[in-house]
Image (cartoon, rainbow, N blue to C red; front, side, top):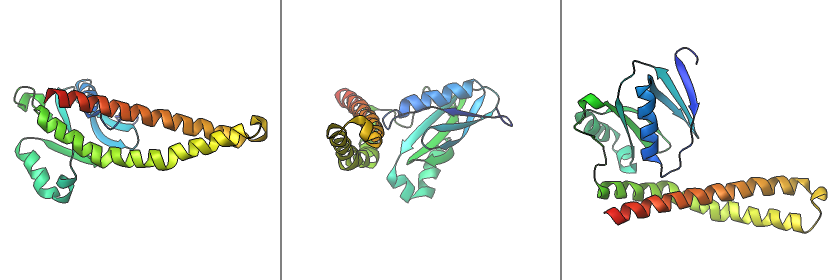
Length: 188
């Protein structure tokens, strides 16, 4: 811990916003309030008085276009705006000021709408990258390995490992998003 600050690394996929909110709330209960997020997975916390604080994330391209009105709407409902990171806007509110278990997205339809926005804004670019870079490179590296001995082309073997890992990470992201999306769709 440096100067009352703590850095934690925690990876959440594009569909794990609820898990991220819970993670931030639990840290605040332990006396660590979020002050900054650095991509891809670095959270910077500052020591504070432990308190139950609700964290909420919103992914809204429309909100970024009309930033003042967007932030005012949240402010009027008692939410403190923290910052934007990776397309997400971060908000918090003391649980004592919240009405029951207050959430920005309180019903299944609004959560499904959020997942649709995340899908368009984050998942489609990942799919494009997956099909235009990861898969072709994986085949290129596989072909390079199969056409000669591994000892003759160690670079191909290294790239094969890197692109294989990327392939499996992307598959996990797509499956995770799909499962959460379908679960929400069934409920609404």
